[in-house]
Image (cartoon, rainbow, N blue to C red):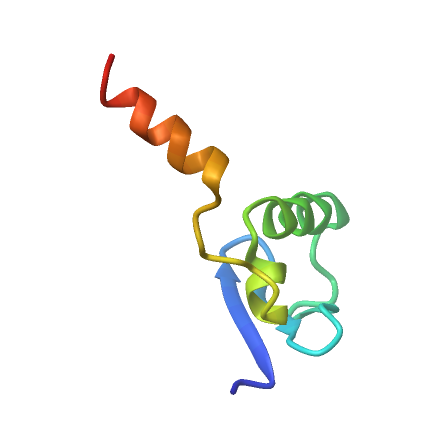
Length: 74
């Protein structure tokens, strides 16, 4: 298993996610703090941090399954 996951963004360079702690580190330490804040929020919202930590559950739960089945009848 990887020690760190990495995602590349043009504004801040490479963002590393530690798979043990979920801590973010940046390849460009002097990057714009506003861009870093936006990217940090994006990584949490889209599940990148959870994926790196191994806690993202890919299984579809019953509520989602019911919703998807109800869409077929529309």
